[in-house]
Image (tube, rainbow, N blue to C red; front, side, top):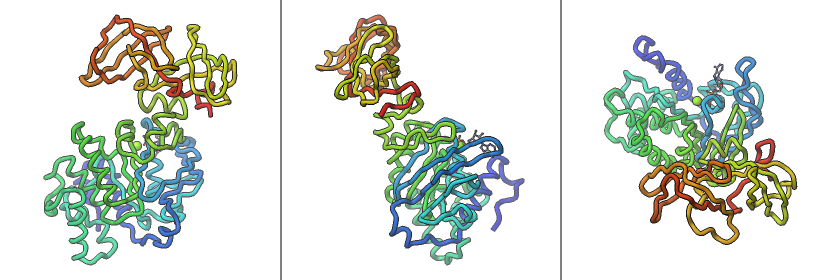
Length: 398
Ligand SMILES: Nc1ncnc2c1ncn2[C@@H]1O[C@H](COP(=O)(O)OP(=O)(O)O)[C@@H](O)[C@H]1O
Ligand SMILES: [Mg+2]
């Protein structure tokens, strides 16, 4: 079996096709005994990967639980694809260990790994039928013909595209082609499914629909999935855990709620969700509550660990959704007086930019009755419990 002649394939898709050929051509059987022994499907231990002098992935430790949906989230160039490629076997780590299904696979060639891979650009073989595209990896494994037909049909049912076996990819829409790529990846029953920005080529509506669909399919199949995106909404909506990356390092690894509510650094607070970052100095800290003097001289209360020492400079992080505007502040809440600088009215919700105490604050609020307009004087309130404190190194104080 060969990939199509280069002259018949758009140049950009060739490397992806070659990668798919390598990954799908796996002939090894998963080691069933390890599945029973461990709930960790993928374990990266101190993985570093360099391209010449450039360190793309730095000392990454990441354990991924069997059956979970884990997202690598971060800006372009932070090393997400490099991690996927190292698990797939397309690149070799400079140091560290990659364990999949209990087996150290650093030196296992790509075609002997049992891994499903889906790219952003689908990378379907354009001159093969849907059936032949999906059957590609199965044929390598000498699966009997009848069984191949049965598995292909089942995979098409799973991705909700029954009956398109004889079509060519070009006869299908972008979203349908992406489903075929997914069917091709899951039909080999891989130990782990790797999805590299699979939705970014789709238009906005379809992307949202596929987001939900993909998650449902993942749950039904129960397959361990590592999903790569730079889209925070996608990450929040789909993941059991989000691994936030920056410059080849893991900044935070947690559930969507954890990374949203308690960002571990200034980078996470800014990259994921909208945050207000307020500079101040610890005036006192007793029994888990600190008084913080803002640069304007105003004072706020914030939940604080004992490590927030009197006199130290901190940044208070408060999510835009946690600010209340124009409401009677709850007992014990912080209250700042300000003025609306801008209103974005979004129907059920509004985004306000408020000038208060020399700060520009953003509040994303649900509108119940009144919409404030530019120039309105308002009180802004937020609970001390909704504050996260960052130290001078921009890390959350713990
Ligand atoms: N083959 C390569 N040679 C040299 N540098 C590379 C190569 N592949 C990726 N890089 C660099 O490694 C960094 C991480 O790349 P990548 O993992 O593709 O990032 P992401 O998927 O997060 O956008 C980037 O700075 C990129 O330019
Ligand atoms: Mg990438």
